[in-house]
Image (tube, rainbow, N blue to C red):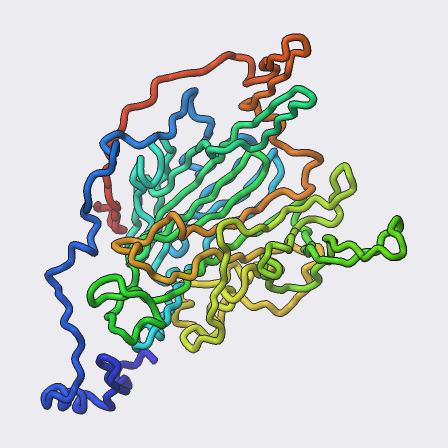
Length: 522
C-alpha cells in the first residue's frame, strides 16, 4: 500500500543472482563471491544520440519534396470554437490533460457519422528475466498523454503551410498552453481515389486522391507517439498511430536472447507490446445501431447445372449474422481478413434495400495484448485483450480507462456485462499498436515507417453509389471515334488551370510550453 512504514526489502537481485537480504548482498560483494557483469562504458554515448552520423547520400544536399497548395487552402476552420470543415466533412476538436486530442460531432455531407473519437489509454507491457522488465506495464494516461503533447515541427512532423491549433489544459494549479500542438493539412495521397481505363469503349478516367490529416505528437517519457486522423473524399475515416523515440533498455548478457535484442555492447532492447485503445462512438443513421458480421466461408456446392458425376465446386459464401450482446471481436477472422464487421441502423436502408452501415476494418497491422491474466494489470486493461470491444453507451461509463487506472488494478471504470446491443446507442473500443521485437535499427530511435497501426471506418451500403463522383478534381478523357485520339471531356470546375509559386522553405523552431499559474503571471 501507500504506508511507507510497512515497506520492506523482500530480496535483492543482481546480475541474475538472488539474495535474501541487503546484508547477504553486501557480504557477497565484499568477499568476492558475487558474479559481476561487464562494466558499462559510460563515456561511449554518441551511438544513443540523434547527432548526424555517416557520409552524405548522393543529392541529399537538395531540399526534399514539399506539399504545395496551388490555389489556396480548402480547409475552413474556427480556432476559437475548434471547428473544421473540408470537402463536406465537419467536426469539432477538443483536448484534455489525460488523453490529448479528441474529435467530436463528425459529419459527412451533413449527416453525423461519429459522435466522438478519442484516445482512451496507451499500454506498454514488457517481458524479461530481471525484476524490472518482467513486471513493467505502463498505462500512459496516468502520466498525461495530453500533458506531453507539444509543438509539432513544421516541415518535419507536419508539412509547411499546415493549419495549427494551440492546446491547453489544467494540471494542479497551472493552466498550460502548448502552441501549435495540433496540425491540420490536406495532402496528396500519391494515388487516385478511383480510376478506370476502358479502351474498349474509348474512355479513361481518374479522381485525384487527397485526404485531410489531423495530427498531434506526444512524447510520453521515452516514446514519441504520432496520433493521426485522416478523412477521405468518399466518406472514410482512418485512425492511425505510430511510435518512435527510445527503447526501454536494460543490461545485456548472453542469457537475454529470449527477451529482447542486443543493440550495443552492454545494452539490449526488451520485447514489449504497445496497445493504444480508442473510443469510437458511432451514430450511423442515428443513435439506434446494431452490429453485423459477414464471414467469408468456403463451401462445397453442387449446382443445378452440374452433371451427376461432376465433383462439387469449392467457392466462397457469405455467412451473415447479427450480434445480440456486448462482446469483443477479432477483426481479422481466422487471421486472413475473412471477416467484415459492420455497425449501423437496421431500420435505415439505401435505395437498393441494404442496411446503411459503416465498416470497421483493419488497416496497418492491428493487434491486441498477447499477455492475458497479468498480475501487474489484473482487470484494469481487459480492453486490450482483443481487437475490438462493442458495448452499449452508458453515461456512467464515459471511458475504458482513467487517470488512476495504473494503480486501480481490480476495479476498472468499464465493465462488459453482455447487455443487448440490438438497436442501441453503441460505443466501439478498438485497439492499435504493435508487438515490438527490438532490433539494431531501433537505435537511436524506433522508426515510424513500420511501427504504424490503423483502422478504417468506411461506408458500407451507406450511400446509393460511390460518393466522390461529385469531386471536380477529376479527369475524364473520351476517345474521338474519327481521330482515335483521347480528348479531355471533363476536368476541374471549368475555371481553367490554377498555378502559384510555392512558398519558400521555413526553418523550424520550437517555441516551447507556456505555463500560467492562477495568479495570472507567466
